[in-house]
Length: 343
Image (cartoon, rainbow, N blue to C red):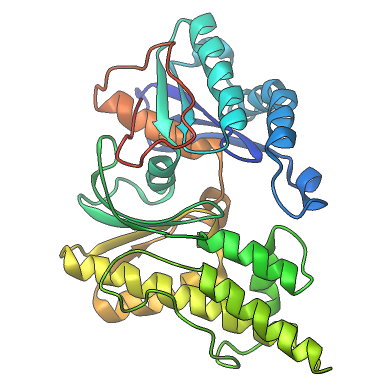
């Protein structure tokens, strides 16, 4: 698709300033400035800190992406930006920047949904999405199951978390175990030295007949287990706790995802979002998909976490589909529903 438009994507929904540039489904640049270190001392993302970090990082990160792609501003054909969901202040920085670039360059603007972008990004690695597919998005803020007939305009919510998202539970359990923030990578590493069957932690909503998730009870069960051992003067083997917790999470995620595939007779499953980088989730999902005859697609870890490439990828799909561009009055919507792919 050498004649496809060049789309620059801007992602600022949380703590990463991500800028991506794509042509069709070809990734040309993906630069990220993370403020994670600034949040680590607080044990979680501080919205005001994130917003200021986006302001400071925006211009140099855009310039770095253009340099990486060997392009100039005048080469860009369209701007795409995450308009929601996410942290309100953080979103505002990205949306304001996108409007400025679009107006200054005289190119169309596309406000897109962060969750749909996590689906679209897989095309940069594995080509066009099957129509339809089931997508499971798991991150610090979201645990969602989606039916995706067409990522450029038709995304249907099948289930979501009723309390803590999977990534949020990872962060909270890591804190209980004395592991650094963000918890996901540290629990993943610790779990490799432990046994996933050492402790029988609960599987919330596993057989409740819905496609929703719940991880709050699991998080609390881990905290109570650790507290009881410490109160009794017993040592806590962190690798076993980490592995057993992680196994409970990925067991529920993969079972629910395959339930969705069976219910809707869909044979392609896509997993995206930051938790999709978890090594045990990827391995168990592949094992269960192979057994069920379902084709699994998971982007490489660098495309699972928040990034500008995913926003550019969805923007490129919208351009290709002939979708009317957004106006310069588009809002930053922190609670944008997944069924609204484009604003």
